[in-house]
Image 1 (tube, rainbow, N blue to C red):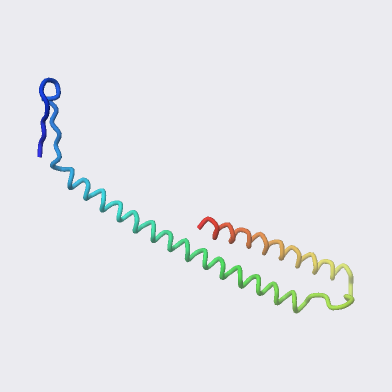
Image 2: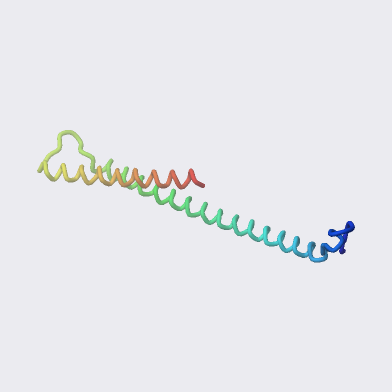
Length: 111
């Protein structure tokens, strides 16, 4: 379909709509492909976040179990420097676990 309109200077302008349908169809197809790709990427990210959550949960449970097994009961016996070192190690491990928890929380929030 070609249109020419008007008289005078506009009479020379012609608009070709013959390829418009195929170009529109091509654009629609590309948009559907992009949407499918984005959904796939979203599902992959969701799987990665769920994996991180499961890994973090496992680490947190292992820390809790170690603490319950080895936490000081009553008045500690033995070399005070060894006891302090053990408590400092546990504190550092807890801090690392807290930092990882914050990262996982942020990942969930962004998702």
